[in-house]
Image (cartoon, rainbow, N blue to C red; front, side):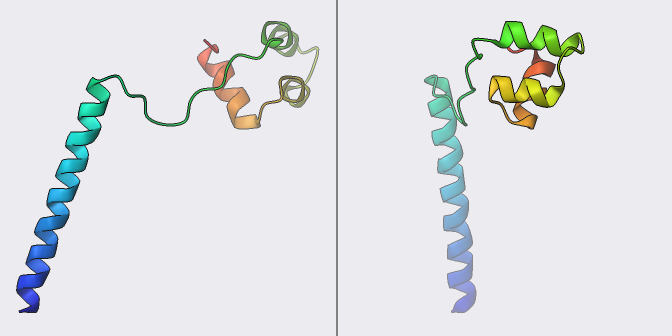
Length: 82
């Protein structure tokens, strides 16, 4: 009896996962965006980054001026920020 209930539970779980995948794919096809939205470019980005690259200010000072965390700062510098 327990074996039958276990098998039914596994089958239902597989069905749930399949429906979830189909729902996510349908939402993507409709243009739904997933995940956290990207932050917008700070107003003083074009001023602070050249100063940092020319070694006029440190990375920590640049992060404080831009009000960004360390990871976000380096990720945006690497990406060229928009």
